[in-house]
Length: 177
Image: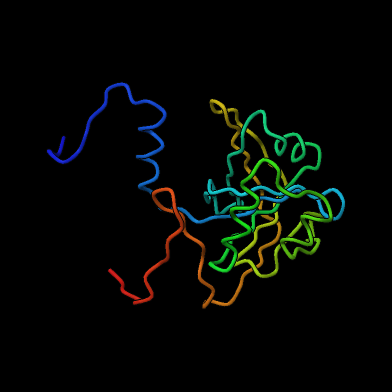
């Protein structure tokens, strides 16, 4: 099933894989653990709904990164779905030298959620989770969280979208298929 316009690689490399995955548009989130002086935040686009009964979501973090041990110790996390107005925050919290602690809380405009993790009130949506389980997967770990609280912005809120290595926008035409 090879189209003449596509390239088939029997042994894809990292760069080719990344470029191909870039063809899949994603939303952009801030993953948070802790609040106040103990806040840690990172930009994340690996979010998936896993189950409706019970309510479970999945995020993927680097196996040797600083987020995984914090989530394990704290027992949970929050995922804040960013809106178009959060583009600068997305870029800032993707950097290795991103703010932590109270400085991070202030920068993202967060409040402490019901789970004790930072929640961004201006986010399109936020999911507060208790860590259910984790699975090692290559150089990442899949964290399955049980959703214990959901925050949702009005329907007019527009999500931040990332596609082909850059930010983009959803069409405002309201087309349906």
